[in-house]
Image (cartoon, rainbow, N blue to C red; front, side, top):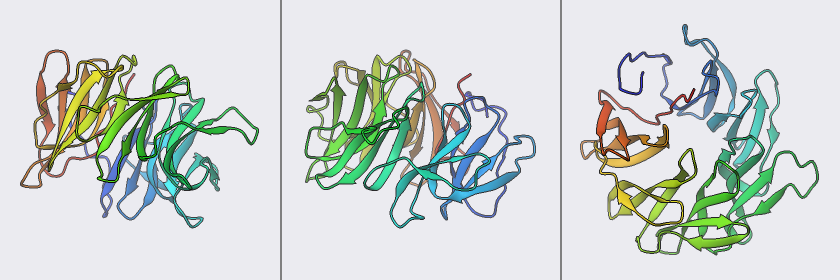
Amino acid sequence: MNDDGSDKKQICTMDINCVNPKWSHDGSMIVFATTDNQIYLIENLETGESRFIWKGFAPAFTTADDEIIFVSDFEGVNSIYALGLYETEPYMLSDGDYSNQAIMSVDGNYLIYSVLLESGKSIMLRDLNDTTDAHSKKINVNKDANLEPDISPDSKQFVYAGFDMNLNGTIYLSENGKERALTKDITSATQPKFSPDGSKIAFAVIKGERVKLYTMNADGTNKKDLGIKGGDLGLFKWIDGSRIIYDAENESEQYSVGVVNISTGDNKLIATTGFNLHPDILNQ
C-alpha cells in the first residue's frame, strides 16, 4: 500500500501466517518469514511467487541487496547468518551464543547485534570489512541485559536498551567508547531507533501495561509522547525525518498500522481491517 493507506494489495497467499516483511533497498524484492520460522523471498512483486530461502526468522536485506541476514538455530543455538540470494549455504556473522536483533549500518560496513556472553546479554559491533579475528568489539559498559541496538547514520553512535533485574529498561548511547544513559527519568524504555539524519531517537516507553511511542533529541533532551492511535505500540520504523510508521494493538486484540508526523502531530491509522503487523517502508 501507499504511505497514506491507499492502493492496498495482498502479495502473500500462503496457508500459514507471513510476518516481518522487509523491502530490498531497490524496491524490487521482499523477504519475509512465516510463523513456523521459514524464510521466503519474493522476486516478482506482480505475481507474488515466493521461494524458500532457509530456516529462520527476522530476515532483512544487506545494503547491497545481494544477501539476506537472518537469525537461525540450525546449528543448535540462535545465531545471525547471511545467505547470498543464489547460494545454498549460509555463513555465520555473530560471535557467542544466542545472537539476535541484528542491524546493519547505512553504508553496509558494520553489523550491530545483541549476544549472550559470559558477562550477560551484550551489544557487539562487527566490522564487516575486517578479515582478522579482531573484527568485533563489545559496545556496552553497563551490566544490564542489553537489547534492541541501533546504529547512527554516520556509524559513530550506538543506542540500545539495558534491562535491569526488575525488567526496567534504560536507553543508553555509546560514542567514542563512552556510554551514558538517556532515559533515567523514565521508568522503562526500549526499542531506540535513530532518525534518518541521526538528530533524533524514537523509542518505546513502557508504563504498566501500556506501551507508548516517544521521541527525543539524540542527546536525550526534549522527550515527547507522540500519542499514537490504535492502542499499545508494537514495532515502528522511521519513514523520513518527520514521519514514523508503527503497529499497535488495542484492548480488543485488533492490530492496526498508523503513521504519525512528529512535527505536526498528524496521526492517522492506515490499515485497520484484520491483523496488521510489522510494517516496513520503501525509501527511494
